[in-house]
Length: 268
Length: 188
Image (tube, rainbow over all chains, first blue to last red; front, side, top):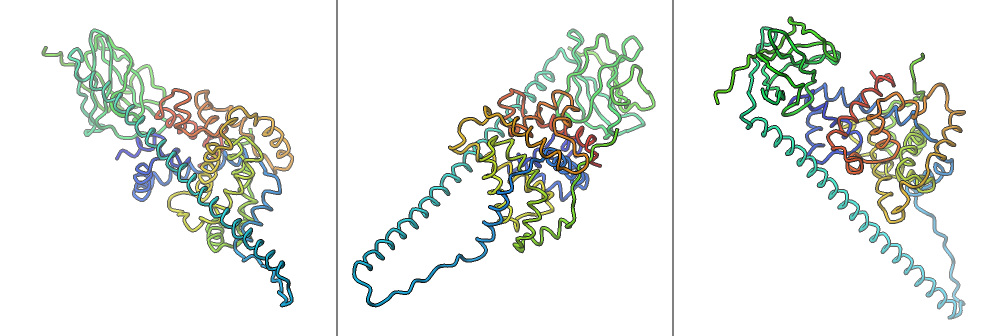
């Protein structure tokens, strides 16, 4: 798992807001156990949320607290019942009254029980509704991913795009990235196979070598999957990636070059 | 310019508080309420937008916290996040129940919030900064997302649906905004 990419997706914020699917929650809880940087980042996200909530706090009316405290103390102690002594010389109508009171009591107890059953049903319904919504959300996410993959695939399959493989320099021999470049429409797409993570102050910058001079093709962070559309380039002979201060520079810092590759014209 | 700082008196260690709450010690809930009710109430009120409903909702939230304390697992997140989620879910459920079927976004909460914010500002010690001021420091697209998620009580998926912005973009924008706010709020 690419931790930086995972964090950059905003998953931790969604988790803290309670808006993740069960599957996302499970994988995140696993990541929390495994990666200290995920734990550290989640802590920051939570502290920020907490601080926002405190910055915007609104004091509820005092009665609310009284009601809550009354509820929790009454639920932990048994309510006291009053005992009424029955006298033997009680006439029959008194028993009849007692019986009707008993019936009234029993039916109210039953009414309360039915109401509770009904409440349980409606909370189940709410649960099903929210599950349904999660499914719809998942479906949307998958759909968006599919759209992106289809778009990427269209570029890869299109024969007017030339694939330029950029291999790692001495700075990072494991680095690998590719550019898909359409010489006639000048479109440039970037795909990263392996680049090392860099600090937040810096950004990667893609360069095209045109007539022996480096031309800026755009800056990027490692927070995307698949392909990234870069600036259009005309007449490229090679592509390279350097590390520059955030926002990029006009001229490349050649000592920081991570990958480079020449354009080999299409055999077609 | 002095850095914004959220003043909160904390005298009981969180782990002690959790332990006392799991033992169902009412004084611990009393303490919890005094410290967190304002933050949680604001979250609930901004979602349900009616004072009366929000008060009822806040009661349910604290009863749930009281009843479910044993299920809280500190390894999965902070106490406040756990309570925040209970509050958000309770409030969102409320807006979906029959009694709240209309009027959610038509009710004008702003008057109420202004009134309470003003009344709060006299009582709140030191220099807690208002949320509006906080948000005004964000770029517009991030402001939009946080305003809807935090002030208007949308879920990320609801916001994606209403605004037509893809859910993935909402999520990354939430993240960018939180990173900005982190700097503003001095979270290190």
